[in-house]
Image (cartoon, rainbow, N blue to C red; front, side, top):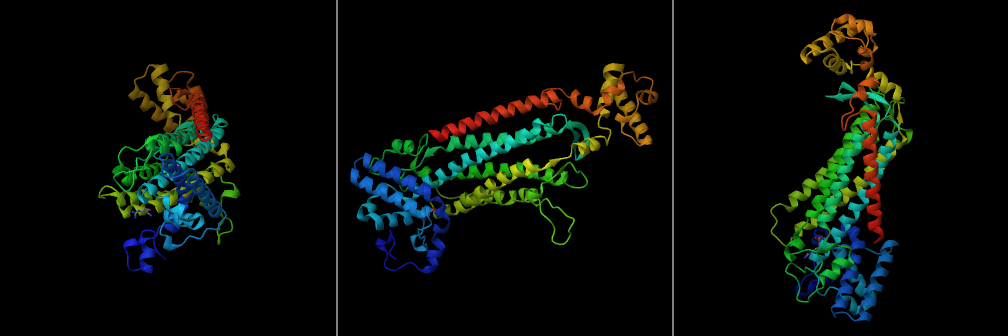
Length: 470
Ligand code: ARG
């Protein structure tokens, strides 16, 4: 089939070249943005006097008709069309005749692909932000009901100090808050329109790029045509932000895997979001959190892949850049899926609060409180307090109990400097609530943190939906 660019060619392309060169089988995902970009371009061409009113109408109607055909699955994509841009342009000309051939005036596929891909990435930037906010909402809803639930807080994965479960969940949510903020700043930095840059040097048509930017929902046109057709920072920003999302998800997933094991038994995954073993009938496997953890690999891979494609490229468009898309498509698809399933997995899990408490009773978690009590109430220097506390711990160990289970008399029998009232600081609740410094685990502090994050989610949701209505 004759190529749209085939004027100077005598021989047909080889089938092998077509297979190698074509991006149509993956960039067809950009069809919405390609049509959106073409409509804006046609309107601009009309505005600067290149298309008549009737020609504009024919082109817009033709593009709408093609959109419907693609939507209904009736559009045939073929390798000979090379990419989505040429597929739609050929279909348009086939549909409306020679007027279709005017659409590519004052445009190159270089600025066309740059704008399509940017629109696509920005669309999913918002969609993923929304999913992150919904995930935060679910985490905060659980956190709210568990500010009294004591669990062992750990460092080095060893029991350290008592915390409440809500506090641990807030720590998760803080990660996703930063992801939302990162995506927002990516959006703001990249919301500029490259269309109208032509192949690399601008066009001789006086394209109204401010009109184009407005029409497509960008803040403004990009500054320099050569940069505009070669810049893929917006895609790299997205891949970095998605890698961070996946790194955060993998850490949450790791806790779910640990916590659902018989060793921890802090949670059980719902049957809906767990799997069985084909050989061991008794098993319930955390495949969902494991996949959530494992899928970070392919997203980091996409980031590394695109960084390598872009490295050392001369400025302006190079065909290497066609390799920018598949990794981004794959990363977006998987992050969307991960965020949705992570939310459901959390919403449906059961939480074994008694077991969390039982485990918090192992490891003398309130030992630091005893040392602090000795310093504060008994006028003992911290180094001595540390030593005396060690002796109390040894005493409790000899009895086979946690220090919080010793009686006041028993504790005081260890050293004459220990004063009355010591028992009350050793209970896990008071130990937890003693950490009432800003950002601490005390119920009061945890509730304030939940409040802050809840307002953040509410404000961002309004911002996001408000933008959509514009
Ligand atoms: N399919 C190409 C890509 O994805 C579109 C731009 C091609 N431009 C060109 N001059 N060959 O990058």
